[in-house]
Length: 397
Image (cartoon, rainbow, N blue to C red; front, side, top):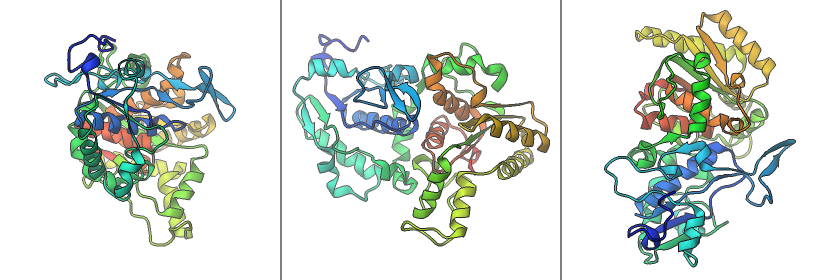
């Protein structure tokens, strides 16, 4: 990458001011990692420091290229350039922004052999219950007090925005304005590898998907995207009921039509039958509930003078369950196409970025129904708002 050049004049090269997040998350799904990458990069941008990008890492201790997830062999790390393009992967910022692009970890270690180390937990100690915007401000102030061009957030010292903040749409709410204006999002692009999955399946998903459209942003008229987490997610949903959990980070806006409205009772590690039922219905809906919701939304959109005629389902459900769902949806109404994540035929490189392709499709859909507690749905909604979709078109189960 041309920016990885120590001889470049200031504000780049050996005179650049850099910020490395050695404390970044590992052993989490892409949705959680993506949320953190976006907010980490935004922190660096606000502090007028060059972001040191990093790969999506599952196992930082892996000796080789692969690790294990249950019985499956998976990549220990996925190059960030395989997932995204644009500023997050070292691309240029949008036109008119003078900031230098992100650099690699290897280049940072070359020009910054002895960086100033910042312990994240020490900085956050006074902000344990603060909102995201307050924490952004605190870290930017801290970083602006450091003269050293080279700063590294200490490994295993905590995260700038942690699990508790991303798990609370209320605490994230005041950060929406600055994030939507951040070039990390205004310049957002998916990688060519991710977009290739979508373009290769355009006949299956939506006929207006263009083969050589790099940014892939145009709304796919008539497409209803449904996010349906299955597998062991039901256990997670039951745990959410025990704590009366809020919707995830970017699934909460006052202009979203669906809000958390759990019945009273439970919390503190326990639940009532009524509360558990509500959480399971909205977090792990069964086929009758899914079909009912789809019929409601289709009728609502028709009443607005528009029509939904195609469905794309983001899911890790087993094939027999998906087959049954498709049958029930077709019995309930006529659709030009119903496609799912399981229908995407990928090569060995594409296989490990399929979830990002799901996110791209859902971001472009005319209407999206997400899982309120999912980081994947949360990121889709963040991108939908950044790309000027009507908030009224983002729904939950």
